[in-house]
Length: 579
Image 1 (tube, rainbow, N blue to C red):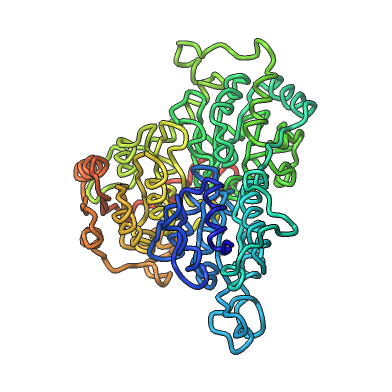
Image 2: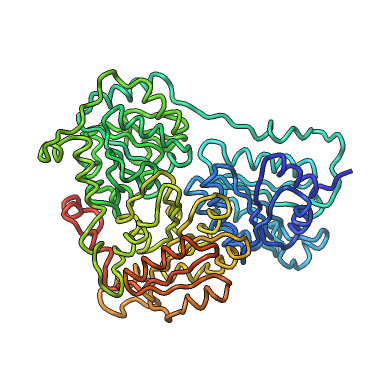
């Protein structure tokens, strides 16, 4: 006979799980007790928050569910950070947790009990508000089936987080040899199928794009989720469309590509926003079109009464959700884009832009895209000033980023400096905290990316976000990986501080000047401080070549105001960011 905990580990092995990001506690200890004898590696971070981010990023990068395990009260509190990001960033994730109850004692003045009974915590209700689906099985058979279903639902349709709350007795009880109902083979139970749009919808979309004079594509996170990079490029070339991206869609196309126009939205590129405004047909692919993406619904940005809108999404509820769509393509982004490329009208593609510079500037799409890409550079990108201009800091980071590098970006000003001035050279080179946008995401995200891929990784955060999860540096040391962590340090919550009408108007925005170099060395990593562009360049080169993690404390010019950078004529014209 086999105990449930042992059978669960066998299920994880059968499903090809590589890592469990977990923190021992409660009845999950029974599960972790079985893992050392399995093919599944355990990554134990310093707390459940960091573990949840690591699991989310694993899912985002691989499109296989990242597994988070830990004790119920802490998975339902600290561990919700990564789950919320997974829900809004469509990252497949499976959470294995427990209710911390002890049999008959669960209804007697409970301690840590999280079943939802009187006097205790209600973990099911917490997870119900965060995950796609959750299960609370009470028998061995139900537990095994619930775990299988958690993996199935995590990748079905729009991916996201699912959870199984393990009941104490069910974890230790023996699994019946011939249970009724039966437990099916893991691969068979978890199998999903990709959806594809109808032929008639594809034909209507192709006709609209083919007839357009100025077609544009807005690529969102759904392109990452489907890894539909080749298909996106094929559609852009087949229909002569400029490709712009949402924030979460950044690096779905190389931003050096001659059809790439940059990132749209309130914190995006003026050139990219103008592309959307000037287009007569918009193909929106895997983008939820949140308020920042749409410049807070600025009337002159997207105009359904004047522009043809084709919305491709894996979930029919999302197509036409924010703006009325003329055509909906419901299915996996790769399937929809592939179908569009296959039926592109023969001879539609325009000739390359003229060699004459004036002709190139007015030509759609390549000339217009080239003009839009000029937003990636401003004079401050070349500044030799000290403290380092954040724009220059980003350009120094760009120097060490190639097609085999992953950049993780935190929340706050650092994210928007990167969004605007880091021109990604390849697909899947940039991922940011943009689902729920929590601070502290980039550092554990970088560790997870380094553990689960063979790529160089650069994690970028402000000093506020880095300090929240800097113990992840120690996890990198323990795991033998060597990401480079760049701290854009202005000794403050820079984005909030810059919202002040006058100095000191908002409480809590200034920080003590922490010595992150000493912190890094205390964790067993390397630490470098950079106060000039040359020092930053040398530190980045040394860090990316090192075989241990490196923390670079970059002292940036705190007077560079991100919001002022975005007060362009476009925003004034459409009433976007600062209205």
